[in-house]
Image (cartoon, rainbow, N blue to C red; front, side):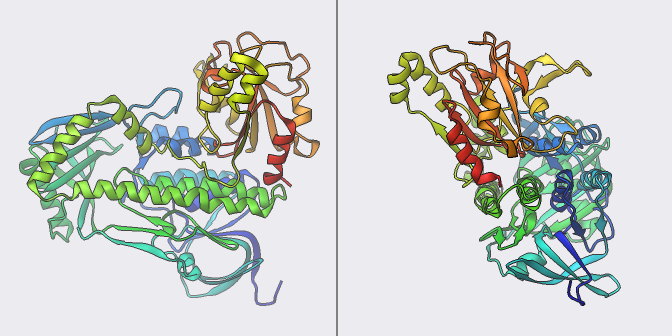
Amino acid sequence: MAEWIDREVQVLISGAGPTGLTLACELRRWGVDCLLVDEKHDTTPVRESRALGIQAATMDVFRRMGVADQMRDEGLPAHGVGVYRGGKKLVDVRFTLSPDETRFPYILVLPQGRTERIVLDRLEELGGEVEWYTRLASFKADVDGATVELKTDDGRSNFVRTRWLIGCDGARSAVRHGLGLAFAGDEYPERYLLADAEVAWNQPTDEGTVALTSEGVFVALPLPEKGLWRLIDAGGRSNAQTPEEIAARFAVLLGPISGLGGVLGETVWTSAFTIHRRVVDRYRAGRVFVAGDAAHLHSPAGGQGMNTGVQDAANLAWKLAMVLRGEAPESILESYDPERRPVGERVLRGTDRAMSMIGLRNPIARALRDATLAGAGRIEAFRRKLSREVAELTVAYPNSPIVAESRTGWVMAAAREGATGFNASEAFRRGPRPGERMPDVLLTQSDPTTGLPQRLSDVVFPEHAPPGHVLLVFQGTQPESGAYRVDFLAEEFIPPHLADRIRPILVEPHKPIEVSAGWRGERLADPADALHRRFGAQGACLFLIRPDGFIGFRARPLEPLAFREYCKRLFL
């Protein structure tokens, strides 16, 4: 260590918001230590609710982390949005999510400060901490890491040498500026108002309220504290600045303008703000990364911002941890940008479209928008598509350099196995694809301790279990389609040096073709063949599930060489 270097760390994370806290917590779950710094003195004050909505995909991240139950206990589930015009409900858009997609078929409303505190408590349980009153002042990156200057609030500097640096430091990211990353985009011209306030009215508290008015769109979201609501003036027509002026504006929006008959009570917090729409040109430069608001900024429409940042962290953490543990080549980190940057760009495009609809001023255009929304909101397919996109369950990485498949085409399958082989090949083709989320299928068996129905994620990602990859081996349901004894698979597919990194589970159908008495791994009964159907497993096949819940690889027929070749991309 050079004399002027105060300490050395493996990972330095700048910014202890939801993204940075999630990243630090996930690294600690892998047993990787890190230094997490923030110039603030504590987590976001609870009275400043800020980011509110936690989507289903993010709740999956928090479940694997071990904090979802506490969040659910403290939060308020919102099951949809009611859209009003002239005080009358125009359409009721309820979230429509399949039971086999998620155990969280709602948006969980929880103030950002509580989300941060819960994750921070978990981080401390895992042996981590935050160094508050400490900001990243500057850094110099090189091929082996970065030398970082940290400054405390009393002006003292100390220098840290880190192998990896991650900027989770928000819209004004010092890490992004230090890298000189392009942050293309612009700012919406409108100015928006926000308040957390008591409201007396008869609006349902399990859904958001959107009022389409002559002065723009007014939004009200229920908060967990009884009688308290998040109010948003998205019309961009008020010049209110002070808390008193903002409260006065919402008083007329709640009553005369929206026609909803709301009466404003005590105002807890107010804000007047503008919205940026930007995304960096790359999420990685050598051994330095950006995540969350440091990488992408967009409208809060749809509640995507914090969620996208948390999922950035979950995506990066397992890859970085495997590299630091000597389990994976550094090249695995090259997948972070091509997997996560398209997600940020897609969210920006989606929120941009929403903002263009919200900001309509022409009366004819507004009338057309309202009529279209009313019609579309009654179509089940539209509600389902919207629900899945808002819940971020449609996120996938089909073009990632670390997802792949080995699949026999239908012509060869038909030639080798006949009509049954053709059908099995087609079923597998239509099944979950590499880069997509693992379907969280409801199982027929119940949890022995709670008596509640189990899901596939309960088996693949049991609570408090160490993270890692899981290999699901399906026996298949059709005897002529490649199903056979799979006693040998755990040994032939998984070489000895990967035995503690890949956990094999044999999925056995209602009527196994042959009993695999010699299988020494875990077994999962599929008595109703629900798992086999959902995964398109008429024939014997396999799916490798990544630690973040996405499918990394699939294969049919069972071909050891193809699987081992794929593993060379991931594991040392």
